[in-house]
Amino acid sequence: MLPTLVQFGVEFRSNGSWMPGPKIGAMIPPSPYARQLADLPVTRQSIEVLGGTTELWTYGPAAATADGSADAPAATTTILLVHGFRGDHHGLEPVAAQLPGYRTVLPDLPGFGISTPLDVDGALGVQHDIHGYSAWLRELVAELRRDAGPSERFVVLGHSFGSIIVSAALADGLEVDDVVLVNPIAAPALSGPRGILTRLAVFYYRVGAWLPERPGFAWLRLGIVTRFISITMTKTRDRALRRWIHDQHDQFFGAFSNRRVVLDAFEASVSNDVSEYASRITPPTLLIASDSDDITPVAEQHTLVAAIPDARLVVLEGVGHLVHYEMPREAAAAIETFLAEGRGENSTSSLAEARP
Image (cartoon, rainbow, N blue to C red):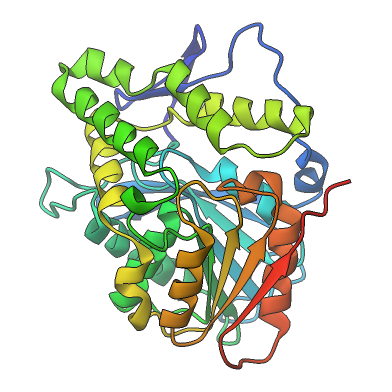
């Protein structure tokens, strides 16, 4: 773990990078999922992958080991959850909280959260593009499965940009038992319902690349931009939940190692989509989409589910691109149903908003 120093709301790390720290004197809205998370055993681990250090958090029972030993009742299913662009593992904790019977593993993507970047300038020369992230995920899964029991079921889940990373890795030979894609990027981002916002984002990141290093880095972490994005994507009318979501973005949306990482990852997120890899996604696959997603319309999700050989689609109603924050219970219920069902032909279902 990298030693850190927190000063004036900024956490400085020993490798020279920095990320948002707690806002001094600020009231942090309580997480609606904190109690469920607190009830789960959690361990933290650091794994060296492609020249960088990947930090990951494991919730729930320990995995069954190859020799059958375990300190606690072992999970028979492991779910690896891959977060989206500009996030870190915190974003998918609400989903993990709803899956207490499973072993859920939440890594920070390379260069985001507190994971260090890949070996860009060293002997490996791995870039933070879709090929680099695909190679990272395949290596990480191989490492996690190395000591697992032979009967353990391994599931990989990707949200948003994470759905592209997972799909690319599957097309490149990643072997898992099942796949879950939440708010998948089913078509080019520029063609989405709010393509104009994506174009504005492209301009925003190009300015960040054009500016000198220090002002460019600060530009990419502008709080007003983070809040605008959060307000735009949040659909819930629950004020407490909205405050908490905005606070999550305030805390973690600027958690990237350096300007190069975030610019390369942004380019990867808008230059690729899941449809490119659909025909090569061979494991049973669940798509969890939403009817108010600003990035990918439902019609594109129907096209995507038809293109994946063995897939089914669940559409959540009354939510947008933040299913993991606003409807983790409904998402988890769909995942559990999917993992329990027999395999069959592609199907589609719809779940209405179920908030109190």
